[in-house]
Length: 140
Image (cartoon, rainbow, N blue to C red; front, top):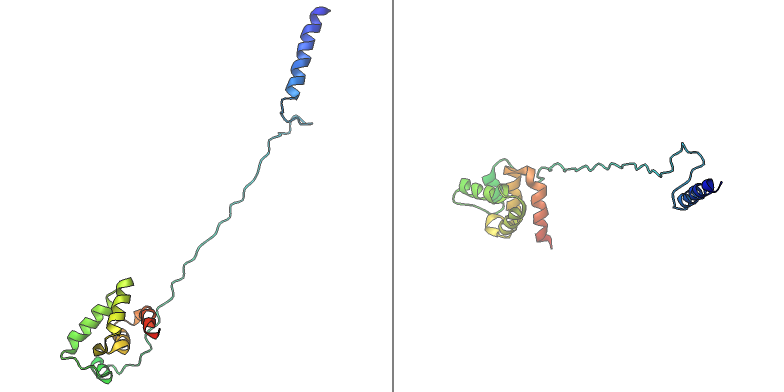
C-alpha cells in the first residue's frame, strides 16, 4: 500500500502545480481558450480633382497687333514681340512662370498686367487661371 501512496502523492502534486501554473482552464475541453480579435480594415479612397482651366475673359478683337496698340504698345515687329511674350508666359511653368509673369507684368513697355492677360487670351487661354494667380501679386 505504501508503494501506491508515493506515486499517487506525486501525481496529485503535479496536478496541483499544473493547475496553478496560470494556464487557462475551460469548463469545456473542446472550447479553445485563446483570445482572438477580428480586425476590420478601413479603406479610404483619395480623389484628386484638377479644376479645368478657364479661358481668358479678356476681350479681344482678333488682331493681336490692334489689341496691343489699344494698350499703347507698338513694337517694331509684332511677331517677334508675340514670340517673346509666348516664351515668357505660355512656355513657362511653376515658379518660373510666376517670376516671368511678375517681371513682364511689371513692365509697362510690354503692356504691363494687361499685356500679360492679352498674351494669355491669344496664345495660351488654358493658362489663364494659373497666370491670374500670379498676377494677384500686383493687387497687394
